Length: 99
Ligand SMILES: [Zn+2]
Image (cartoon, rainbow, N blue to C red; front, side, top):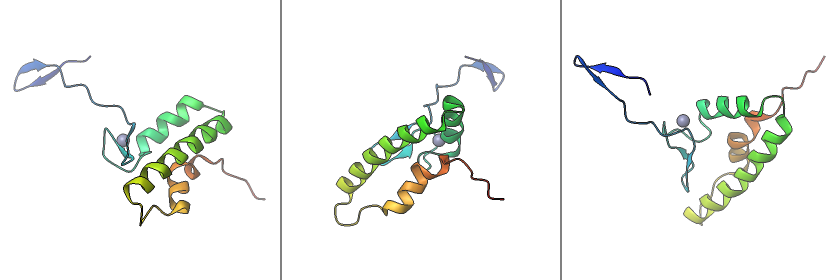
C-alpha cells in the first residue's frame, strides 16, 4: 500500500472499501451512491470485457436480489421496476447502431 505524507509524516491510509453494494440499501460501500456507481460500472465493464451477455446475466441476478431487498424494506412502496432495471441492468446494454 502506498505511503502518503500527512503533516510531514508518512502514514498508511485506511483501506477503502471496494465499490460493492451495501445491502439491503443497495448503496455503494465506498462512495454511498446508488449502486452500481460510475466506478462500479467501469470495474464491471473491465472485468467482463467483451462478454456483455455474461455481464447482463450477472446483473439480472443482482436485480432480482435488489427487488427482493427493497420490497422487504418498503413493502407498501417498493421500487419502480423500470427505473431499477435501468439502474442495475440497463446501463450495460450494448449500444445498437441504426443506420
Ligand atoms: Zn462507488
